[in-house]
Length: 308
Image 1: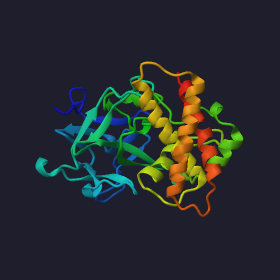
Image 2 (image 1 turned 120 degrees about the horizontal axis):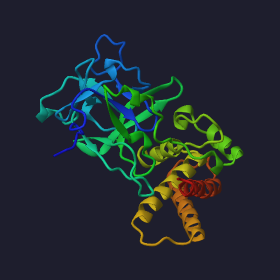
Image 3 (image 1 turned 120 degrees about the vertical axis):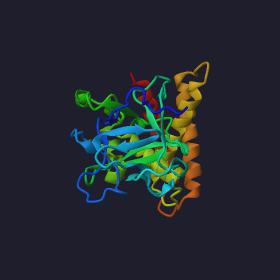
């Protein structure tokens, strides 16, 4: 039987992001909420923010509509948006049925707070957050589950009678420690990314994991052929870092730190070279991309070492 965590939350509840503390909400300024985009916003304790399990549907209190994958299609180049719609008969509701996965582990093998909410028709795709700092909004989307850097994919269920829990600070944050990146380098990377790619990054002394993830998506999911040296390097570093994290979780012993660093740098350079050879190279410099990938993967590695 698929878990919906309904044994703990039979009544109306808030669905709260472990990373930001914001909640999933319907929009409250629409004449007809059908097909409207579902958002993630700071809690206001209104009916638009309350949800209840109805079998495998997630029903909204204010609208009586359910979470729905827009047009029922998964998208890699554009976001797969989550909207509201009337509940369909179960046999036709493949894009409206949801489950909960508990006991999520981080890259260090530690259990993470919260749960993953996944689509029953595509259980590798989970509810995620797409932020737009230009207008200060966050959309609820569906995105492939990430073994690393999955903070925006983790949720907790808060009963409507426990509103005081909404005032608690978020359990985790989604940025690299500022001490891992020299400010001059961070400024260069920050200025090379659009606000949407930078996510919630507020200082040039921080390089968000979400920025790595955005570059990784451009390369490996969207297969964008026009990439900057920076984007190539960040995608290659992130891909190398992800693979290393997954491999080391199953390893009985770990090599010495110097060997790990050397291996990561070599792998990141090879990956950057492979990406470079497949993209539009007219305005790119291969040596720059490889050198940058080598530095960035070490910064990601050091971020793991400094995790508590």
